[in-house]
Image (cartoon, rainbow, N blue to C red; front, side, top):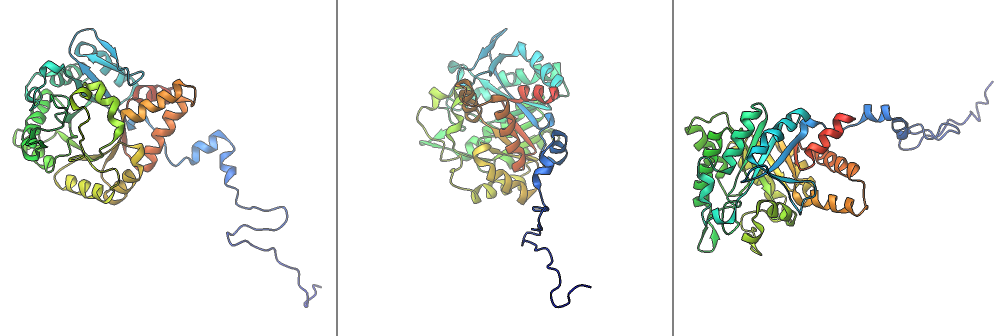
Length: 351
Protein backbone atom coordinates (compact mmCIF):
# COMPACT_ATOMS: atom_id res chain seq x y z
CA UNK A 1 0.00 0.00 0.00
CA UNK A 2 1.18 3.53 -0.65
CA UNK A 3 2.62 5.36 2.26
CA UNK A 4 -0.10 7.89 3.10
CA UNK A 5 2.36 10.04 4.98
CA UNK A 6 4.80 10.15 2.03
CA UNK A 7 2.87 9.72 -1.26
CA UNK A 8 4.89 9.47 -4.52
CA UNK A 9 5.88 12.90 -5.87
CA UNK A 10 3.97 13.95 -8.98
CA UNK A 11 6.01 15.04 -12.01
CA UNK A 12 6.63 18.76 -11.86
CA UNK A 13 5.11 20.90 -14.62
CA UNK A 14 6.72 24.05 -15.92
CA UNK A 15 4.77 27.29 -16.20
CA UNK A 16 4.65 26.76 -19.98
CA UNK A 17 2.83 23.45 -19.52
CA UNK A 18 5.79 21.27 -20.53
CA UNK A 19 6.44 18.33 -18.22
CA UNK A 20 9.88 18.21 -16.64
CA UNK A 21 9.68 14.48 -15.82
CA UNK A 22 12.78 12.54 -16.94
CA UNK A 23 12.56 11.36 -20.53
CA UNK A 24 9.67 13.60 -21.53
CA UNK A 25 11.16 17.10 -21.39
CA UNK A 26 10.25 19.06 -23.40
CA UNK A 27 6.80 17.70 -24.27
CA UNK A 28 6.24 20.57 -26.70
CA UNK A 29 8.80 20.31 -29.48
CA UNK A 30 8.13 22.84 -32.25
CA UNK A 31 10.94 21.35 -34.29
CA UNK A 32 8.89 18.20 -34.92
CA UNK A 33 6.90 20.06 -37.58
CA UNK A 34 10.13 21.32 -39.18
CA UNK A 35 11.85 17.96 -39.58
CA UNK A 36 10.51 16.99 -43.03
CA UNK A 37 9.90 19.04 -46.15
CA UNK A 38 6.35 17.70 -46.48
CA UNK A 39 5.57 18.70 -42.91
CA UNK A 40 7.03 22.17 -43.30
CA UNK A 41 4.85 22.68 -46.37
CA UNK A 42 1.73 21.49 -44.56
CA UNK A 43 2.09 23.92 -41.66
CA UNK A 44 3.39 26.91 -43.62
CA UNK A 45 1.35 29.96 -42.63
CA UNK A 46 2.19 32.17 -45.62
CA UNK A 47 2.45 30.92 -49.18
CA UNK A 48 3.64 32.82 -52.22
CA UNK A 49 1.72 32.19 -55.44
CA UNK A 50 1.98 33.45 -59.00
CA UNK A 51 -1.44 34.97 -58.35
CA UNK A 52 0.29 37.42 -56.00
CA UNK A 53 2.48 38.94 -58.72
CA UNK A 54 2.20 42.10 -60.81
CA UNK A 55 4.95 42.63 -63.38
CA UNK A 56 6.10 46.26 -63.91
CA UNK A 57 7.01 46.84 -67.58
CA UNK A 58 9.08 49.74 -68.95
CA UNK A 59 8.19 50.88 -72.47
CA UNK A 60 9.84 53.30 -74.88
CA UNK A 61 9.49 54.55 -78.45
CA UNK A 62 11.23 52.71 -81.27
CA UNK A 63 11.08 49.31 -82.91
CA UNK A 64 12.59 45.93 -82.12
CA UNK A 65 14.02 47.26 -78.85
CA UNK A 66 14.76 45.29 -75.70
CA UNK A 67 17.03 47.76 -73.99
CA UNK A 68 18.74 46.87 -70.69
CA UNK A 69 18.24 49.22 -67.75
CA UNK A 70 21.77 49.63 -66.40
CA UNK A 71 20.66 50.41 -62.87
CA UNK A 72 18.36 47.37 -62.70
CA UNK A 73 20.16 44.17 -63.77
CA UNK A 74 17.88 41.87 -65.73
CA UNK A 75 15.24 44.55 -66.40
CA UNK A 76 14.54 45.80 -69.94
CA UNK A 77 12.79 48.66 -71.68
CA UNK A 78 10.59 47.35 -74.51
CA UNK A 79 9.40 49.05 -77.65
CA UNK A 80 5.70 48.70 -78.30
CA UNK A 81 6.16 46.07 -81.02
CA UNK A 82 7.74 43.78 -78.41
CA UNK A 83 4.82 43.92 -75.99
CA UNK A 84 2.76 41.18 -77.58
CA UNK A 85 5.54 38.73 -76.76
CA UNK A 86 5.86 40.17 -73.25
CA UNK A 87 2.11 39.80 -72.71
CA UNK A 88 2.24 36.23 -73.99
CA UNK A 89 5.06 35.46 -71.56
CA UNK A 90 3.10 36.91 -68.66
CA UNK A 91 0.01 34.86 -69.51
CA UNK A 92 2.00 31.67 -70.05
CA UNK A 93 3.53 32.13 -66.60
CA UNK A 94 0.14 32.78 -64.99
CA UNK A 95 0.94 36.36 -63.98
CA UNK A 96 -2.42 38.15 -63.55
CA UNK A 97 -1.42 41.70 -64.49
CA UNK A 98 1.31 44.00 -65.76
CA UNK A 99 1.93 47.64 -64.87
CA UNK A 100 3.13 50.03 -67.60
CA UNK A 101 5.76 52.73 -67.05
CA UNK A 102 6.97 54.89 -69.97
CA UNK A 103 10.39 56.24 -70.88
CA UNK A 104 9.67 59.54 -72.62
CA UNK A 105 12.27 61.28 -74.76
CA UNK A 106 13.36 64.60 -73.17
CA UNK A 107 12.35 66.60 -76.26
CA UNK A 108 8.72 65.53 -75.75
CA UNK A 109 8.52 66.71 -72.14
CA UNK A 110 7.19 70.06 -70.97
CA UNK A 111 6.24 71.84 -67.76
CA UNK A 112 2.69 70.45 -67.65
CA UNK A 113 3.37 66.95 -68.97
CA UNK A 114 0.97 67.65 -71.83
CA UNK A 115 1.86 64.42 -73.65
CA UNK A 116 0.27 62.48 -70.77
CA UNK A 117 -3.23 63.57 -71.85
CA UNK A 118 -2.85 62.95 -75.57
CA UNK A 119 -4.74 59.96 -76.92
CA UNK A 120 -2.33 57.67 -78.69
CA UNK A 121 0.66 58.53 -76.51
CA UNK A 122 3.25 55.87 -75.66
CA UNK A 123 1.29 54.52 -72.69
CA UNK A 124 -1.90 54.28 -74.74
CA UNK A 125 -0.03 52.50 -77.54
CA UNK A 126 1.35 50.03 -74.99
CA UNK A 127 -2.10 49.37 -73.52
CA UNK A 128 -3.57 48.74 -76.97
CA UNK A 129 -0.73 46.39 -77.96
CA UNK A 130 -1.05 44.32 -74.81
CA UNK A 131 -4.83 44.13 -74.95
CA UNK A 132 -4.77 43.19 -78.64
CA UNK A 133 -2.39 40.34 -77.89
CA UNK A 134 -3.81 39.15 -74.55
CA UNK A 135 -7.19 40.72 -73.77
CA UNK A 136 -7.55 38.88 -70.46
CA UNK A 137 -4.23 40.09 -69.03
CA UNK A 138 -4.78 42.86 -66.49
CA UNK A 139 -3.21 46.23 -67.37
CA UNK A 140 -2.41 48.80 -64.69
CA UNK A 141 -1.28 52.35 -65.48
CA UNK A 142 0.03 55.09 -63.23
CA UNK A 143 -1.72 58.42 -63.03
CA UNK A 144 1.27 60.70 -62.46
CA UNK A 145 3.10 63.31 -64.48
CA UNK A 146 6.74 62.68 -63.56
CA UNK A 147 7.60 60.67 -66.72
CA UNK A 148 6.20 63.51 -68.85
CA UNK A 149 7.36 66.73 -67.14
CA UNK A 150 10.59 68.55 -67.87
CA UNK A 151 11.10 69.10 -64.13
CA UNK A 152 10.50 65.49 -63.03
CA UNK A 153 7.74 66.22 -60.53
CA UNK A 154 4.43 64.37 -60.32
CA UNK A 155 2.37 67.50 -60.92
CA UNK A 156 2.56 71.01 -62.33
CA UNK A 157 4.63 73.69 -60.62
CA UNK A 158 3.11 77.07 -59.80
CA UNK A 159 5.13 79.64 -57.82
CA UNK A 160 7.84 77.07 -57.04
CA UNK A 161 5.32 74.67 -55.53
CA UNK A 162 3.73 71.50 -56.91
CA UNK A 163 0.15 72.72 -57.21
CA UNK A 164 -2.46 70.28 -55.99
CA UNK A 165 -5.76 71.09 -57.67
CA UNK A 166 -4.28 72.06 -61.02
CA UNK A 167 -2.35 68.79 -61.06
CA UNK A 168 -5.47 66.79 -60.23
CA UNK A 169 -7.26 68.25 -63.27
CA UNK A 170 -4.51 66.95 -65.56
CA UNK A 171 -4.43 63.58 -63.77
CA UNK A 172 -8.13 63.15 -64.48
CA UNK A 173 -7.56 63.75 -68.19
CA UNK A 174 -4.59 61.35 -68.16
CA UNK A 175 -6.72 58.68 -66.49
CA UNK A 176 -9.44 59.18 -69.07
CA UNK A 177 -7.20 58.64 -72.12
CA UNK A 178 -5.69 55.55 -70.49
CA UNK A 179 -9.10 54.11 -69.72
CA UNK A 180 -10.21 54.80 -73.31
CA UNK A 181 -7.16 52.88 -74.57
CA UNK A 182 -8.24 49.83 -72.55
CA UNK A 183 -6.50 50.20 -69.17
CA UNK A 184 -8.14 48.06 -66.49
CA UNK A 185 -6.74 49.78 -63.38
CA UNK A 186 -5.76 53.41 -62.90
CA UNK A 187 -3.12 53.74 -60.20
CA UNK A 188 -2.73 57.33 -58.97
CA UNK A 189 0.85 57.53 -57.69
CA UNK A 190 1.10 61.31 -57.44
CA UNK A 191 -0.01 61.78 -53.81
CA UNK A 192 -2.10 64.87 -54.56
CA UNK A 193 -4.96 65.44 -52.13
CA UNK A 194 -8.41 64.47 -53.41
CA UNK A 195 -7.22 62.92 -56.65
CA UNK A 196 -8.91 59.54 -56.10
CA UNK A 197 -12.37 61.14 -55.77
CA UNK A 198 -11.75 63.37 -58.79
CA UNK A 199 -10.53 60.49 -60.97
CA UNK A 200 -13.40 58.24 -59.88
CA UNK A 201 -15.92 60.95 -60.75
CA UNK A 202 -14.28 61.62 -64.12
CA UNK A 203 -14.20 57.95 -65.05
CA UNK A 204 -17.81 57.39 -64.02
CA UNK A 205 -19.09 60.46 -65.86
CA UNK A 206 -17.43 59.24 -69.04
CA UNK A 207 -18.77 55.70 -68.94
CA UNK A 208 -15.77 53.94 -67.38
CA UNK A 209 -17.53 52.80 -64.23
CA UNK A 210 -15.85 49.37 -64.35
CA UNK A 211 -12.28 50.71 -64.46
CA UNK A 212 -10.69 50.08 -61.07
CA UNK A 213 -8.54 52.42 -59.00
CA UNK A 214 -5.48 51.18 -57.14
CA UNK A 215 -4.43 54.17 -55.07
CA UNK A 216 -0.84 54.67 -54.02
CA UNK A 217 -2.29 55.61 -50.66
CA UNK A 218 0.90 55.55 -48.57
CA UNK A 219 3.75 56.52 -50.88
CA UNK A 220 6.83 57.65 -49.00
CA UNK A 221 9.50 60.15 -50.07
CA UNK A 222 12.05 57.36 -50.36
CA UNK A 223 15.59 57.08 -51.68
CA UNK A 224 14.71 53.60 -52.95
CA UNK A 225 13.15 55.01 -56.15
CA UNK A 226 16.43 56.08 -57.76
CA UNK A 227 16.88 53.17 -60.22
CA UNK A 228 13.24 53.57 -61.34
CA UNK A 229 13.77 57.25 -62.07
CA UNK A 230 16.73 56.32 -64.24
CA UNK A 231 14.59 53.72 -66.02
CA UNK A 232 11.91 56.26 -66.97
CA UNK A 233 14.40 59.03 -67.67
CA UNK A 234 13.37 61.48 -64.95
CA UNK A 235 16.62 61.50 -62.92
CA UNK A 236 18.21 64.35 -64.86
CA UNK A 237 14.93 66.28 -64.89
CA UNK A 238 14.41 66.08 -61.14
CA UNK A 239 18.05 66.61 -60.19
CA UNK A 240 18.42 67.27 -56.48
CA UNK A 241 14.83 68.45 -56.05
CA UNK A 242 12.75 66.84 -53.30
CA UNK A 243 9.25 65.38 -53.49
CA UNK A 244 8.77 65.75 -49.74
CA UNK A 245 5.97 68.32 -50.12
CA UNK A 246 3.64 65.63 -51.47
CA UNK A 247 5.15 62.21 -50.74
CA UNK A 248 5.10 61.02 -47.13
CA UNK A 249 7.71 61.46 -44.42
CA UNK A 250 9.37 58.07 -43.72
CA UNK A 251 8.97 58.71 -39.98
CA UNK A 252 5.16 58.79 -40.11
CA UNK A 253 2.77 55.87 -39.72
CA UNK A 254 -0.46 57.37 -38.33
CA UNK A 255 -0.49 59.73 -41.31
CA UNK A 256 -0.36 56.69 -43.59
CA UNK A 257 -3.53 55.36 -41.99
CA UNK A 258 -5.24 58.71 -42.55
CA UNK A 259 -4.17 58.69 -46.21
CA UNK A 260 -5.53 55.16 -46.68
CA UNK A 261 -8.80 56.00 -44.96
CA UNK A 262 -9.31 59.02 -47.21
CA UNK A 263 -8.54 57.11 -50.41
CA UNK A 264 -10.97 54.34 -49.47
CA UNK A 265 -13.66 56.92 -48.74
CA UNK A 266 -12.97 58.59 -52.10
CA UNK A 267 -13.59 55.37 -54.01
CA UNK A 268 -10.33 53.43 -54.24
CA UNK A 269 -10.92 49.75 -54.98
CA UNK A 270 -7.42 48.76 -53.83
CA UNK A 271 -4.62 50.54 -52.05
CA UNK A 272 -0.85 50.33 -52.21
CA UNK A 273 2.03 50.94 -49.84
CA UNK A 274 5.28 52.03 -51.50
CA UNK A 275 8.06 51.03 -50.91
CA UNK A 276 7.23 47.63 -49.47
CA UNK A 277 10.10 46.12 -47.49
CA UNK A 278 11.11 49.22 -45.46
CA UNK A 279 7.42 49.73 -44.65
CA UNK A 280 6.18 46.24 -43.76
CA UNK A 281 4.74 47.66 -40.56
CA UNK A 282 2.56 50.01 -42.60
CA UNK A 283 1.29 47.17 -44.79
CA UNK A 284 0.43 45.19 -41.67
CA UNK A 285 -1.37 48.06 -39.95
CA UNK A 286 -3.30 48.99 -43.08
CA UNK A 287 -4.48 45.43 -43.71
CA UNK A 288 -5.40 44.88 -40.07
CA UNK A 289 -7.28 48.16 -39.69
CA UNK A 290 -9.11 48.41 -43.02
CA UNK A 291 -9.24 44.88 -44.46
CA UNK A 292 -9.26 46.18 -48.03
CA UNK A 293 -7.25 44.69 -50.92
CA UNK A 294 -3.74 45.87 -50.07
CA UNK A 295 -0.67 45.79 -52.30
CA UNK A 296 3.02 46.38 -51.74
CA UNK A 297 5.49 47.65 -54.32
CA UNK A 298 8.92 46.03 -54.13
CA UNK A 299 10.51 49.09 -55.67
CA UNK A 300 13.53 49.44 -57.90
CA UNK A 301 15.96 50.14 -55.07
CA UNK A 302 14.92 46.99 -53.22
CA UNK A 303 15.30 44.95 -56.40
CA UNK A 304 18.63 46.47 -57.40
CA UNK A 305 20.31 46.16 -54.03
CA UNK A 306 19.45 42.45 -53.90
CA UNK A 307 20.80 42.01 -57.42
CA UNK A 308 23.95 43.99 -56.56
CA UNK A 309 24.63 41.88 -53.47
CA UNK A 310 24.05 38.71 -55.47
CA UNK A 311 26.41 39.98 -58.14
CA UNK A 312 29.13 40.22 -55.50
CA UNK A 313 28.41 36.70 -54.32
CA UNK A 314 27.16 37.94 -50.95
CA UNK A 315 23.75 36.25 -51.10
CA UNK A 316 21.79 33.66 -53.04
CA UNK A 317 19.48 35.66 -55.32
CA UNK A 318 17.01 32.77 -55.71
CA UNK A 319 16.48 32.51 -51.97
CA UNK A 320 16.64 36.27 -51.42
CA UNK A 321 13.92 37.11 -53.92
CA UNK A 322 11.53 34.48 -52.55
CA UNK A 323 12.20 35.40 -48.92
CA UNK A 324 11.76 39.10 -49.60
CA UNK A 325 8.43 38.56 -51.34
CA UNK A 326 7.17 36.20 -48.65
CA UNK A 327 7.94 38.88 -46.06
CA UNK A 328 5.73 41.33 -47.93
CA UNK A 329 2.95 38.76 -48.22
CA UNK A 330 3.32 37.80 -44.55
CA UNK A 331 2.90 41.45 -43.55
CA UNK A 332 -0.56 41.38 -45.10
CA UNK A 333 -0.18 42.26 -48.78
CA UNK A 334 -2.67 40.62 -51.13
CA UNK A 335 -0.36 41.20 -54.08
CA UNK A 336 3.07 42.56 -54.92
CA UNK A 337 4.45 44.65 -57.74
CA UNK A 338 7.93 43.26 -58.33
CA UNK A 339 10.53 43.24 -61.08
CA UNK A 340 11.24 39.66 -60.05
CA UNK A 341 7.76 38.63 -61.25
CA UNK A 342 8.69 36.52 -64.32
CA UNK A 343 11.66 34.92 -62.58
CA UNK A 344 9.62 34.08 -59.49
CA UNK A 345 6.74 32.78 -61.61
CA UNK A 346 9.10 30.36 -63.35
CA UNK A 347 10.57 29.30 -60.02
CA UNK A 348 7.13 28.64 -58.55
CA UNK A 349 6.12 26.69 -61.65
CA UNK A 350 9.25 24.54 -61.48
CA UNK A 351 8.74 23.78 -57.80
